[in-house]
Amino acid sequence: MTSSCALNGRAAVVTGATRGIGRAVAEALTAAGALVCVTARDAAEVRRTAAELGGIGLAGDVAGPGHPEALTELALRAFGRLDIVVNNAATNRPYGPLMDTDPDAWREAFAVNVEAPLRLVRCAWRGWMREHGGAVVNVCTEGATHPGPNVGAYGTTKAALLHLTGQLAGELAPRVRVNSVSPGLVRTEMARFVWEPGEAEVAAGLPLGRIGEPQDVARAVVWLVSDAAEWVTGADLLVDGGTRVRAASTAVPYAVHQRLRGGPGV
Ligand SMILES: NC(=O)c1ccc[n+]([C@@H]2O[C@H](COP(=O)([O-])OP(=O)(O)OC[C@H]3O[C@@H](n4cnc5c(N)ncnc54)[C@H](OP(=O)(O)O)[C@@H]3O)[C@@H](O)[C@H]2O)c1
Image 1 (cartoon, protein in one colour):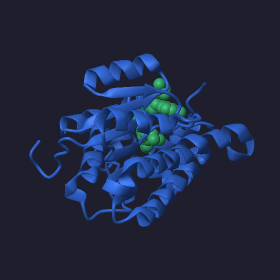
Image 2 (cartoon, protein in one colour; image 1 turned 45 degrees about the horizontal axis):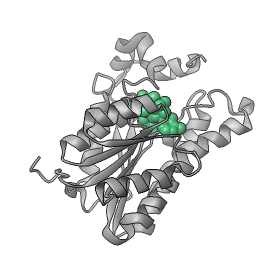
Image 3 (cartoon, rainbow, N blue to C red; image 1 turned 90 degrees about the vertical axis):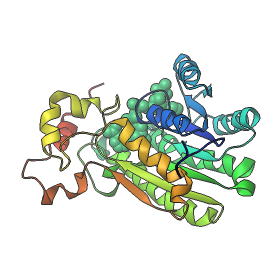
């Protein structure tokens, strides 16, 4: 790629990169010329993904002890640099009313969705970015700014991640840019229980007439980490097919909330 979105020779770490949005991000970064290091918990999937992308990988839980340190060290050892961090791995559990939420599951959600991104950015900062610069993208959600049925824990962690994004953007400027993307409903495993039971109905309630594909989000991430966005930091880029503006666009009820009321099952 020779455009201002080219990432030739830059090195990236992408969490949760074996499927869904993270996989699409890792693919898009690779296509833009970046060297990519992927992580997720399933070791076989990490090996397969790394091999398919011509990159490297490390299996583990992003919230696990020593994981961000090991991931950063691996990327620095293999690539000699670490220019890009994409914090994509997340959990949408615990699911249900907050009054019934198990405190350990609540803490685990914060460990994975908020603390892990901070720990990884800290490692990347100390190991490379403080001296050489870089770009971080945190994957939040369109729902981070408003309540939704049964997703109180998830939404609260993502609201915290959104705040963390702005805080880090200010603290790490001018060397490191920190932004987020906030996807609407995207065709992935995590959201299958929302889109699969009646995709046409969900799509009809969206101004742009379809649910998202992982590549929709990946293109936004590539732009944010590229030099094309060199004057953008602390921003949240909505990639939601118009979900936030649907009230002015369509009279069709928002089927996503009906699905969330039904829940993902166990
Ligand atoms: N899909 C949507 O509609 C939607 C909407 C808004 C925001 N998002 C956000 O987009 C991001 C990606 O979601 P997705 O829909 O692509 O999910 P997904 O298809 O379920 O993929 C999740 C990826 O993260 C990995 N992962 C999960 N927990 C992990 C952990 N604790 N440590 C390391 N890796 C972990 C998974 O692999 P392993 O299971 O092997 O670990 C997998 O590679 C998340 O931040 C999510 O909140 C999604």
